[in-house]
Length: 105
Image (cartoon, rainbow, N blue to C red; front, top):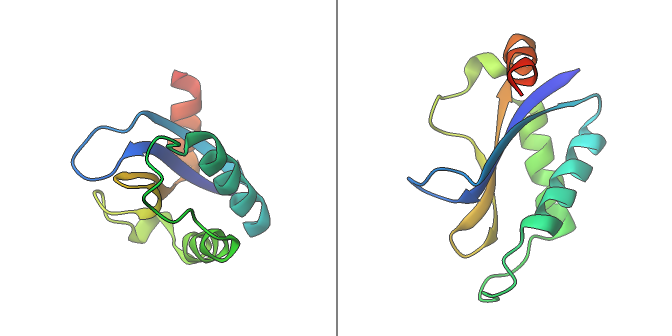
């Protein structure tokens, strides 16, 4: 089982709109969750940017799957741009962090 923290909102120095942990067993499940989140958080008012392709989702999921929660930076993560200035930011987390976050909800 792998654990990730998903943050959705404006990219950069802003607070995310939502933060929640996820637990997945396969890379395909992670890719599906990212695609679903992108579908619901896209900004339809600003159509200046190119929406992510299936290949973009697959490459982000593959990069995240290779990362370990021990080698992550506290302030850097993998970001998938959804619209100009808006994105999905994903960090690997430990099982203990996942359980602590789930208990606090």
